[in-house]
Image (tube, rainbow, N blue to C red; front, side, top):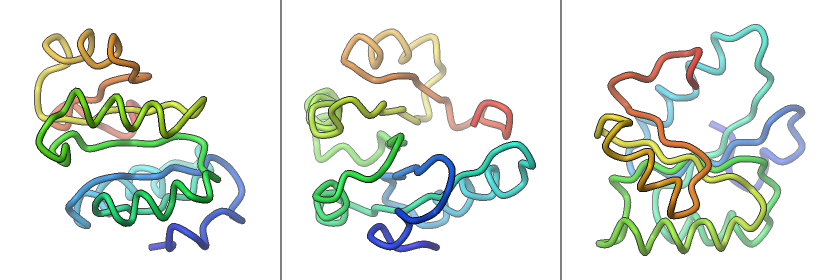
Length: 124
């Protein structure tokens, strides 16, 4: 794992992953590592405190937010993330099928919605 403050010098896409489970971060990172076409560095934020520290620097290109980490209100937290990220896209990942969530999350400002059960290396 690259620390949120040290990964900024890496070439390629800089992904900030906001998920409470480190195993999920490793699982997501394995998709990028398996790809010959994708050059990406990723940093893990487990919660609000590490997210706020990483946001202070803002050197990422895309945020991937696992919506199980919502601080009690998914819509309010998504609005906060979208505003905090500015022009950087926020991609939401969750357990619900895309048909039930993608319209809702994109209407709230997310760039895309990924279903955890349907996620594979190509979608990632």
